[in-house]
Amino acid sequence: MKRKGDSMAKENRQVKNSVLVDLFYEDESAEDNDRMLYNALHEEPLPEGTEIQKIRVDNVLYMNFENDFSFGAGGKVLVLGEHQSTINKNMPLRNLMYTGRAYEQLVPVKKRYKREIVKLPKPEFYTFYNGKAPMEKEKILKEYGQFIDTIRKYQDEGDEDAYEHAIKECIRQGILADYLTKRGSEVVNMLVAEYDYEMDIEVQREEAFEEGERLGCDKGELLKLIELVVRRLRKGDTAEQTAELLEEPLDVIRKIYEATGEFAPEYDVQSIYRKYIGD
Image (cartoon, rainbow, N blue to C red; front, top):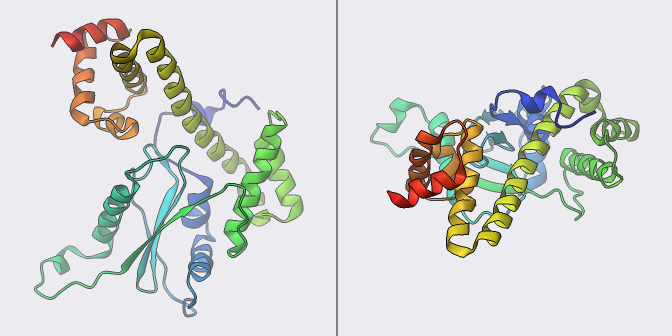
């Protein structure tokens, strides 16, 4: 299968789910998976029949791709996300923002204006690591980790159909077998979207860094940033989305967006640079 040619990778850039979110939020077995996950993370298991409150909060932890989810159970709100490919020191802030939006869904509007104190479920934050360290306690997460390891094995071998072969092998070995049998083709599409998105950002950063090194520190840094902004602009991102994604001040990104106006649709970076520093 040609990764870049896949129709999923070329569709308009809506927010997409990761396989992890599908397992614990979208799939018909998601509530059972959430209960098992809660019990694996706490010494005291949930009583039989405890309600799971699934919570959907968009575009907070990871721009344009949903690899986080949350649910309420046992007087707690669990916020869970898969680790990002790069270190982000603002994750505590994003977790706080996420929790605020989650509480908005849990607390009815009228209740917020009552004089009595509104009791909120305790927030708990978890980041999933799918590296090489063992993960034995929670069955679904363990099998998810084994599935990711199987994909990496085929990718390391240079297999162009790594996703399909990994799915077939995991089904044979009983790893997420029911889920992968039922949703195999959809899982491939989700993996393609996730891979393309992370690779896109990584390549952009590497290329822009090399260009900045070539041109010298001050000018190179600004040209590097302009190049990244132009690429996001071409993909239809707003200034707010671009600032969030690149972790740059919004006023700087807005100024670059304004400088691009007369140079559309070619967006010549050198011309934008001259316009930017001339303002």
